Image 1 (cartoon, rainbow, N blue to C red):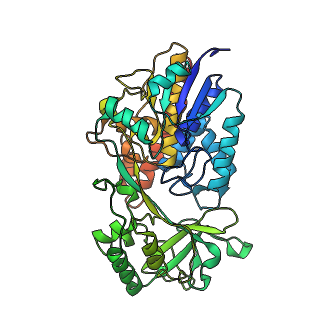
Image 2: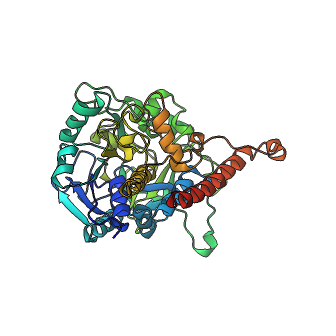
Image 3: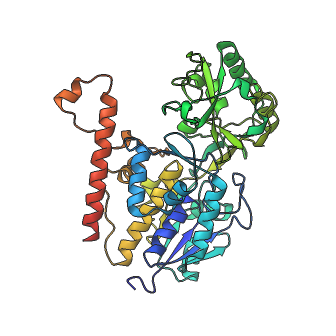
Length: 457
């Protein structure tokens, strides 16, 4: 075997850790996967299986001309197990890939534990260097997920990162479908047409609000009791995942141009509501819905009181309520090399959200990226920089060059601009779409050529 006797330690069985472990094992590398959630759950976790989707059940768009669609293309090209299981356990969500999060997590756990080259160790990681030596591994990937445990965080802050090592994230609530009043709700996808004559049903359920209802709801969000920050720390939220109550505090119209925007959600009479709350199925049965974009700091009691003011929610029962949790990430530009290895400890690598990316597919893709670089090293090849015009290359370039650490999702703003022809520049209404399509095509072609050439290096 090409990698006989080679072994890699992976700390953390989140999306990045699972994808990295499976890629390495599928290429003949022994993997020791250390995970502690079977022993105890952190405040954001609900289940003891791997690859848990703690915030939403959506892996975002599959449309090729979107950033997430591009990232999925590259993940597929690398052999992403996370992506395969996402499609295998998908639930209807328009042009997005949403999954039954319990079945998705359960199957990934089963597959990892069944792999002959993966040893799962139920333990809390404290010192990656000591664990690497204990298990006689060549390299280590730290993919400790949205909430790094206290012992591992102590090692990181004492030996690597210093104090600037966190931001806050929030989770949206999930409501029991049987407790909703459907006479006040309607099914409609924002962009995907539905053929109701053939029995099709839209993937999203909508709760429309008129101006008075909306403004009263925003007022309730502002005045509701919030969960205070812990340990005298200030909340530092990721801008694209703001709690809905913070949006409300920023101005009465903010949510109406964000998670409650009514664009594309015409009602049966053809009118468009003043604002709209969208609900997405949690599972194939449609027995539960999550409130899209409704991450929140509200106390549990206040969530029930305020969210029952949403049309159709007067008798709503919540399967689980929203919460705020602390997420950890490094200043990668200062601490890591471009292959995500530590400048101070070259055999220690980092992957996933801890590197400074935000989002499920982003985290998994960095896990694949790091595993791919380690595969090269195990063959005595040098790590190699990815083209910045690719999705993964753009993410890596961002976290390695941003002056002030600020986690980012994939978006075409991270890629170099494309050149438009004279005719394309004359197009006004569709110019943005043309740019995205060209950037996506350029990225896919560049990715394919890069991977093919790299295999020959």
